[in-house]
Length: 493
Image (cartoon, rainbow, N blue to C red):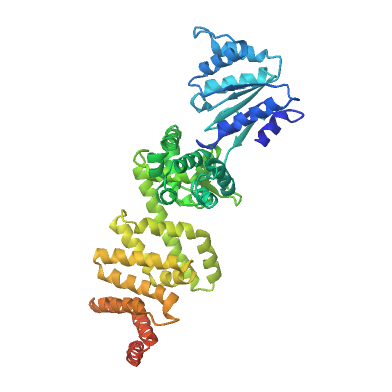
């Protein structure tokens, strides 16, 4: 807000037109209203202020402007646009006109109208709020993009809205602020739900697991606003939004290049979406899609008529980042281990998202098998066991692989998955004390492998199973177990 006031009052050459652009629910209207209040409360300012609410046509805007300026209502048979131009050109006092939510009326006619006012109405300053930029370009036009509130600002807003009407308000506000994506309208809806008795734990769980379902059932206005906002975009823009929505976090043009024809197309798409406020620029040079827009594009691919586009993008994403992981695991055992670890940390969110996509219940059998096989490969298993943090995340991954392999009935994959899960548990537990569950995992993997063909037994994974099973027996407290472990270890020689 301060930036807008400064631009409109700077000396010399105050700007003539400010356009406030953002996603729905970000507070464009409230910012514009607050700017009006500052001008009206400033006794030294002699500016008149006119606020025009959302209108469906440019003629309606002009009709309302003329009514506010002259106190008279002109019928539709008049050329309202031309009359408004003339009346604004003849203004004798400095006037700020706010046109709220102009996205419905923007286009060539609106751009021509605004350009005329910039040229011939020197006493007029315009403030527009919109979900998209105008086609008019001029040094006298300034664009202000509203971005999501940070977590601290979101928490403060929630606390003001809740007014301590909920137990543990501060702790609750902190959790919700991290889940609402910094959209003021969504924060307001969450506060209203809580004040009306909605269970805080259920609200947090739904925001974390399925925010779009929560929007549909309990914040329909926000859901519909998102839908209307996206429906106004071109098919090409919607397709590109669905493509980049596969990324869980911020990304660069280079990161998304595999989704497009080449790097030039990727950079062009990214730049256009930043220009339209669909992507937010980060301090590290990357951009990010708002979490609610991302989740909407994922959940409503069918509604957006982009199912095939989304499925293709997700397939490319999964295979690209799991292949990156395979390369890093090979690099890890070379002289570039530190570089492999650093790269993995930078790409961890995308790699784990690819695993999640492949291993979820609704994925195809082929995708599930691909994810399980990548996770169980010897280099990847060893790499993840050492670098994936927290360790519980690695254990959870291999538990999922084990469950999928068990349900599929594929004995080889089950033996591989048991070996991987046992190895992960061995890293956590069995090096400190004997762990019966881990021993049983290796024993089951060994027993299954022995039922397979001789060719399938001659592999590094089976050798690992034998070695770790022997180690587990050796860690048991009984002399019999120790001798059994020694026997298994020596059988490898």
